[in-house]
Length: 89
Image (tube, rainbow, N blue to C red; front, side, top):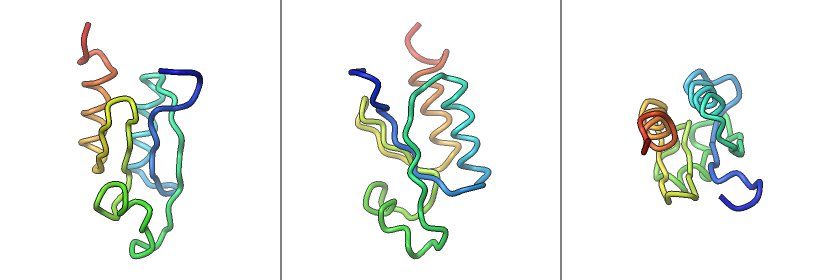
């Protein structure tokens, strides 16, 4: 990583339990990230659709690995495998 710029951008909704699950894992792994809060109306989430192809949140972009994904379970698994104990030891 270069500097203090977060490599991970998290697209999320306020008070969304699936988004909070991803936030918890990011914090547990001590990963810097930038939160981008999206429109509450599903049909207005064009920014998320542009990056992930879907309007669902949470969605992340990991600049370090070039990965873009949505679905909290997939994101949590990816983060733990890439940056947690499941990664290269």
